[in-house]
Image (cartoon, rainbow over all chains, first blue to last red; front, side, top):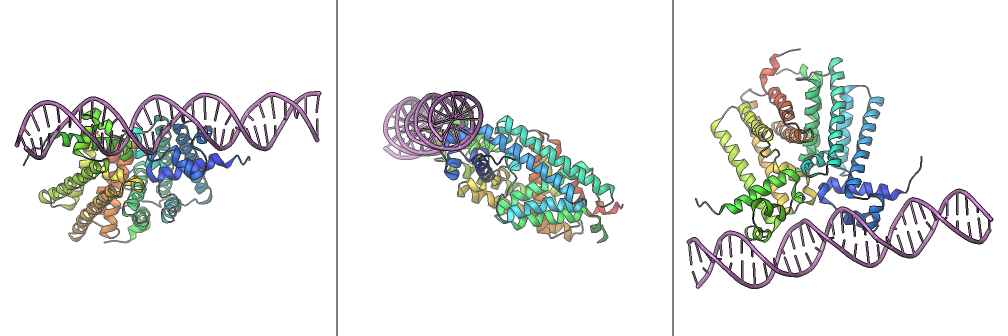
Length: 199
Length: 199
DNA sequence: TTTTACCTACCTTCTGGTAGGATGGCAGTC
DNA sequence: GACTGCCATCCTACCAGAAGGTAGGTAAAA
């Protein structure tokens, strides 16, 4: 399909990494202009306002996530393996510092001061991620592969929360390894196999 | 001790709630001035710069947290109950919307763009909270009350991460209940008693 | 008399955003 | 092919307001 002028993509990519670094109020059009090598005013041609830019960015991020989840469903049917792929994705992002934070997790922390159009997109991401994780938990439980200590929904929320918290800790300690330290046992615990080890 | 002019405390309290809402770059001296009922310039008398203000705020927050942990140690010796008190504190804060986010968790997400003096305080909070939680995990395991699936340290980090992530989710869903939904089972799982329920 | 707490007035820099012009590619038409 | 209009892209030059911060003053408490 049309390989449209990459400038707008460059702007989005740049905005993304700037948001990952400091959130919605942590960057300006001038920052993007510097990195992309374009004038501040030119950005307004592609994205009339900052809200437009970030809303587009988050919407695209949601599409990518949705596509990612569909892709996992397509190529891996084992629920535990699916969660491992998800956690592994972020572990890699954090390890190579390419995008060491989910922009929606970051923006969610600023929700009260976020333009509401952006807030809606962010909340939608949480719902769709949670819905997918819930379905994975359900399937894992149905197939007798997971032992859930509460409802699939609660288990999914706990999983998501832990992953988000682990991103935060990796940042706070400035240590990518902490993400794996937290998410590794999280995955192991879900697998029934862990029950075979008795105290 | 001297009940110093409450203005400076008002400023700190106001800054705190503004940071809880939108992070370091989400508020300005003008915002504080409006709420406290003082002129913008007067704030500089109490806190010469924004960095001073936020560093002081986080330092005081750390002291409070430290005092809180000491207090828990003093009045409750049961490790599980200690964790319950900690989680319950935040559950209450989120439920009544008084301070529905840990400022250090929020600021940690902005660490890359935070003034480094502030960043140091934030990181210190993570370390001291983690250290306390680790000691609680150790004690719980030693007394045969917790069954840990990994090292006390890793279990403490996972606990902290989940609590932070649960704050985020409560905000994203705009639903205080989700915090309890996530942290409740987290506490139950730690208790040995849960092992008595066999599939 | 010094200090504390606050004020008005002002400064510089950055903010998101606008107006209007230059360039250049790409239809359609002659 | 040359001419034309058009639209996309990017530019310079602005703007109003908000940002953090300073200078210097007043009034009252210590």
